[in-house]
Image (cartoon, rainbow, N blue to C red):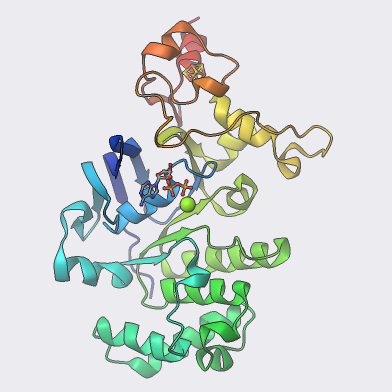
Length: 328
Ligand SMILES: Nc1ncnc2c1ncn2[C@@H]1O[C@H](COP(=O)(O)OP(=O)(O)O)[C@@H](O)[C@H]1O
Ligand code: SF4
Ligand SMILES: [Mg+2]
C-alpha cells in the first residue's frame, strides 16, 4: 500500500546559534520545497548549515540554537516549527524519519539494537512489535546485513558502516513518509555507498516517500536526488532539477563544486579544487553575498547587496551575475 507522499514547504527559515558575539545565523532566509514523492539533495561544504537545516525539519535544533524565523509546513501535519512536547515527539520517527549526522555513534551502547528497536516501537505505540522486527530484519537484509544477528548485537560489536545502516533502518522502519538523511553514507566505501543509496531510492519509490538527503559530496547526491539545493554560508544559493544543476550550473559556487569532482568532470586532470575555505558563523559576511570572498565574478554590488533568490526557468539562483547576464 503506497500512501500519498507529503509535500514539505520550508519558508523563510532562519536558525541562529548564540555565541560570544551574539546570536549568529547558521541558516538564513532559506525557502525550499520538497515536492511530494521526490528526493531532494542538499549539498555544500562543511559548515554551510546543512545539518542545522535537517534538524529544523524535526524542530530539533538544540540550545544554544533556535529557529528565529520562518516555517516548515508538512502536508497533513502542519508547521513543525510550532510543535512542542508530546506532539513533537510523536511527529519525530512516526511522521518524519531521520538519520542524524554521525548516526554511527548515536546508538545506546548499553542495549542491543533489537532492544532499542522495541523501545522505539513502544514509544510510538506500535501494536504489532513482531511486524516491526520483521520489517527491521528485512531492511537490514536488503542492505546486506544479517538482520537477526544485528538485532542481537550491541553497538561496539558493529562496524561504523554497519551502524550507519542500522541508522538508516531506524529512520525507515516506522514507515514515516518524510525522511531526512544527514550524511547517511559517509562511513561507507564507494561501492557500499552506492548500493545503500540504491536501496534508499528503491524504498523511497515503493513507499511513496518525500526524502531529503544531505551530503558534502555532490557525487553522492548526483546518483540519487531528483532535485538539488546548494548551500553556502547558511544561504541556499542554487536549486533545481539535479540534471540541470549538474549539467549547467549557474551559481559560481555550484560551478566550483562541480569542477572539483573528477567523477563529474570525467577527467581527473581537469578537476580543480575550489580555492579558499567556507566561512564560519563568525566570518559569514553580514551584508552582501556570502560567497564573495571566493568568487571570481565579484562586483561592487556583491559587497553591499545580498543577492535575492530568483527563479530562472526551472532554477532558483541567488547571484547578481546571473541576473546581469540575463538582462544584458
Ligand atoms: N551547537 C552549535 N553552537 C554554535 N554553533 C554551531 C552549533 N552547531 C553548528 N554550529 C555552527 O553553525 C554552522 C553550520 O553548521 P552545520 O549546520 O553543522 O553545517 P554542515 O552540516 O553544513 O556542516 C557552522 O558554522 C557551525 O560551526
Ligand atoms: S552575487 Fe556576486 S559574489 Fe556572489 S556569487 Fe554572484 S557574482 Fe559572485
Ligand atoms: Mg553536517
